Length: 337
Image 1 (tube, rainbow, N blue to C red):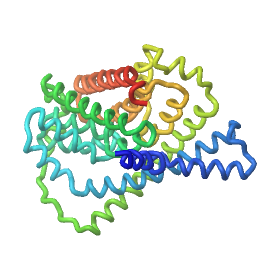
Image 2 (image 1 turned 60 degrees about the horizontal axis):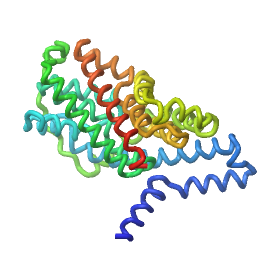
Image 3 (image 1 turned 90 degrees about the vertical axis):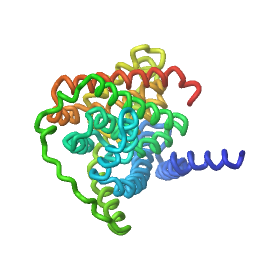
Image 4 (image 1 turned 90 degrees about the horizontal axis):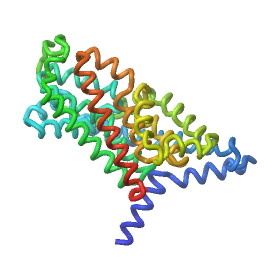
């Protein structure tokens, strides 16, 4: 048992958190005459370390997840979802969302295709909620900062939001608020092409290169903001505004995160810095959920597919779920971190 615990600690510290890389960069900067205790030295260490770490994890994750995703083209996914009914269909849709694109804007076209193919609106919304919020990449990246317990609970609660949210939308009879051109769109059943292992590897490589090019600016901006918070912003400010002692911190973080556009990879360095500075765990996770699920660009895209009442209900349900998750994590933070 002790050997298993030590093995897991090694994986978490040296593989996921890459502490060896942080030490290596620190030694290199010190050899160049920079003090790691200075603002410049500390900021450079944070920026270089987090940039390399995130891109390394990102590359491995996207390649692996994309290879897995090659087994679930939209036609096959629709067939799988069509076999289930009720809350079971919502659950399967939420789980399938974990192996699909990494941001809400990428998930919306798939959501539109599923809706046009005749799947219940509640099922398609369960997919739409889970896809950006709890993809497999978020599980690994969250483990690299917050540890396994926090990451697993985050994913479970995210899936619950997706299942409950989709179920509630269906019970409210929101089907009629899907735009007519989506509901009446012609859908042609296509026989899935049989891919070879080489095809799947090529697909994964293309997904990797395309995703890295797309998210790189957000990662660099996020790491830059994280370095600034980590080395310049006074800890007392963060604790006062975003600490667990502020009863409105979770709501504030959710509202601040909603207009932004980023994905899990861009928010990770900001979350890491906020945690280090004393922000509440639930406040940080609520911010991340809001950014990835309710970003303004994705809501503008979604408005093209659904009418205002359905969009408002979707935003309200997701916001309520995110706030509840935030307060839950703040309440149990001392048990998890």
